[in-house]
Image (cartoon, rainbow, N blue to C red; front, side, top):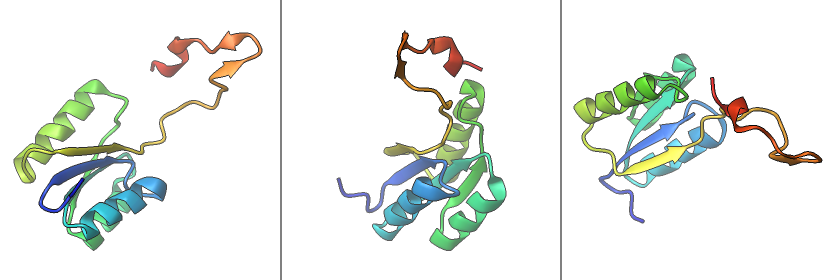
Length: 107
């Protein structure tokens, strides 16, 4: 995959693996939109790489759709999506009693 000239969305791009991914994509020539709850940190990373930061709770379908619409408006149609937002709960996927209930993932 050649990200040069492509638009990328990176969720959780304000820190950790998401930040590293956003920086790597930008270094390869992608336009990067960072979607993160922590807008201050996301905005700093976006400023460093020439991208944009959008505050977004990716667990919310409405919030996600509105954020993607904003990316399209400001940057163009995204072709790359990297989900790095840390939204998982702290449970074992499969424990002694089998898989955990899926409703634990729903807000």
